[in-house]
Every structure is written in structure tokens, then in C-alpha cells.
Length: 349
Image 1 (spheres, rainbow, N blue to C red):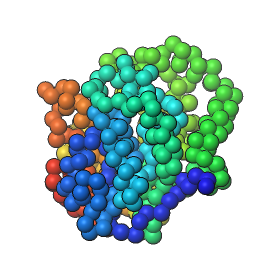
Image 2: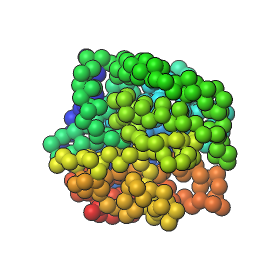
Image 3: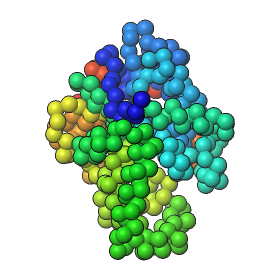
Image 4: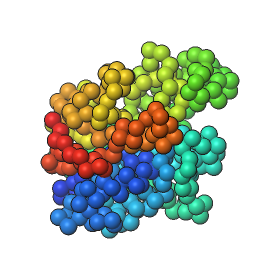
């Protein structure tokens, strides 16, 4: 059977869980707050849906993925792929993936301690991840990790007879061919050869890398799978450090152009339940500062990622960060109520 990039949500009440990022203990707490058994069964027939990024950065990505797999096989849990799962499938080591990729172990030491996946388990893990959809939908709801983008979805429809990895590689090859013929591509290669190693140092920005920024901009828009799982970007006004490296592009608020009636729930875009003034300033052009507010042109898009993926900061630098700054939440549907891992609840608006 060919890969089904768009699959149907169950016709039951749902609990839509934000990016977990390997924080398995926090997830277990949330699971109990929501009334589920340890294995994911709910006595009232509710089902769990994950917006992607179950793995990376946190202390136990293998346990989180193994838990999801058993619940999924029993029909109790669904997920869409996030950019972090996609990196595993694309064999693309990125920040926070040292639990899976040996090549990242040294660079990701600041996330340690964490549990690593056994080498013999990697093939099976990739196999069942490759079966997971990019989109989930039913009559009253859509779920995608980062961005619901009709033009990119149409391109996936044209490639629906291929496997996910085949689609990804073909889109990647087409993109690389296009970029390699661009007039600025030699400058990109120069920047990567000379400055890329410096790009992961938060204390010292590398020299300006305009060709690298142009490369990232084009990649975010022209690769449909990447666009849905990472969102589309624009050139940043100035370089900034985020997600483990210095960047020359910044995210676009695609929801301001979303005009459909059907609500969309996403993850990916870290928000804070109790944002500091600095956090509000940093996100003022993207997400609304009020963490319980739906956003977009029709106020029907909601990001349920409350930054649990940054919990390592509180463990590593307790003088600077508090654990309660980084939360894991689920959005109950159709109630539109947030439930957090500490038991706090809040209606959205």
C-alpha cells in the first residue's frame, strides 16, 4: 500500500498533545491528568493525538516513541510527523538528536543525560515512523505539525503513489538541482565550508552568511514536506540564535492568510504559558502574547506547543531558568480546554 500523507482522525473526543521532545516523565504526568491509563486507554473513549516532535532534546526519546507505538497499534493514539521525526527519516542529524545519531553525541552533550536508542532498533523505528501521516483531518478539525499550506499539499497529492522517503528524496533532489544552478550557490558553498562550524556557538555569531540565508529561505518554501513540518520562512532583519544555531531566516505567520472555516491545531512554534516581557517581545510578530488565544485571520488556528522541549535549560542552569517556564499541554477537543502536566486547566478563547 502506498504512503498516505493525509489520514483521518477518529470520530471521538480528542486530547491533542503538544511537542513532547523526549520529556517522557512530563508526558506520563499529563496522561494521568487527562484520565488515561498508563498504556493510553481512556475509560470514556477519548483518543490521544500528537502534533509531532515526540523526540529530541529531552532525556528519553526512545521511551516516548516506544510508548506511542504500542498505543498507536492498539488504536488509542495518532500522530503527525514533525520536523524532528523527519530528520530521523531523512538521515539528517540535527540539534538534539544525539540519542539517535552518534555524529551528534558530542555537540549535543549539553542535553545529557539521556537514553540512547539501541542500534538494532533504529531500522524498525524508522519503518513505523515512515507510515505516519503529515496531516490528520476530520469534518471539524485539521492537525499538522507546523503549517497547513494548500499549494504544498497539492504537490504531495501528485506524489501520493510514492513512499514518504521516496517523496522526500525526490523533492530534495529537485530542490538541490534548482538551488545549485542559482548564481549565489558558490557563495553558499563557501559559507558552509568556512563558517558553518561557528554557527552552533551561541556566544559568537559567525560572519554574515547571506547565501546560506537564501538557501534556507528557498528550502522552506520549495520543499513541500519541509514546509508542512517546519513552516515557511522569510529573511530575518538580522541574524539571531535559535534552535541550536545562528539563523538568517525567521518564521512566517502563515495563519494570517488561512481563510478556511475548519480549525487547525499545530505545534512547532514554542510559546510560553507565563511569558516574560522578553519572550513577548521576541514573538510579537508571530504568536499572540496571550497563551490561551487562538490566532490567525479567522482566529481558528491554535499552537499547543508550550516549550517543554526547553526543559533541559532548567536542569542545566537552575539559577537562570525555572522548570515551570517549560510546560507540556494537551488541547481537549471539542471542549477547547488546555490541560497541563501539573493539572492546571484553562479554557482557550
